[in-house]
Length: 287
Image (cartoon, rainbow, N blue to C red; front, side):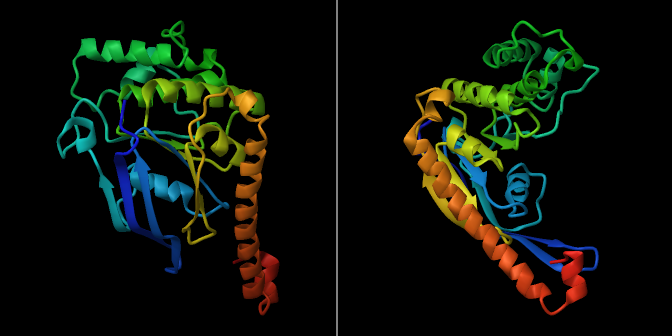
C-alpha cells in the first residue's frame, strides 16, 4: 500500500493558453497549484469550459505546451527518479467507448501492455488479474458488441490498471452511461480502488459522483480555470446507496453546488457586460 503522506504528483503555477483561429489568445488555466497524494482519489469539478480536461491532458502527456511545472515523484514507487519499464507514468480512461470492436476482451486489455517491457507470462498474469478485479473474468473471449456499455467501460478500466500506472487519469469515465449503471459503476470503482490503492485524478461534471468516489474534491473557477476550492471528503467505508442517504453527503453536494453556481453566475454576468454595448454580438451569443 502506498503511503497517503507521499506526494505522487505536484503541479506548480500551471497555466495554459490556446490560440483561436484568428490569433486571439484564450487562457484556459491560470496559476494552478495542486498536489495529489499517493493512494488518493482527487476529483476535479467546475463549470463547463473551466479547463478540467485541459489539465488532464497535460498530466497525460498529450499536451506539452504550457507554463509552470508538473513534478512526478516516481521515487516513491521504486526508489529511483525514472519511470520503471514495467509500468506507465500515467494511463487514461476516457468518456467514449475506447474498446476495439475486432478484438476480444483479453486482447483489448493486453494492448495497453504493448509499451511495457514485460514478458508474455507476466502479461498473461496481469490480464487475468485485472479482469478478475473488474468482474470480467468470465468474459475474456467476448467481443465488445456482446457487452453492455458498463462492461465495455470496465474493459477500458482494466486496460489502464494492467499497466500499473503511477497515476490513473479518468476523464468523465461514466458520463456516457445511464443513471442506474453509473451508480453501479461508482460502487465498482470504489471496490477497485480499495483493493489497488490506486492514485487517481478523476474529472467529472457530476457533483454527486465526485463526492461519492473521491477522497478530495477540487473545484475550478470559470475560465481561466483556477483552484477555487479544495474540499477534503475522507475515506468512504459505506456502500454508494448508504452513502447517498447520509445527511453529510447532501450537505457536501449542496456546498459544492453553491460554489459552482456562483462561478457560473460570475461568468454570465461578465458575458452580459461584455455584450451590452454590442447588440449584434449579444444576439449571436459570442463571449
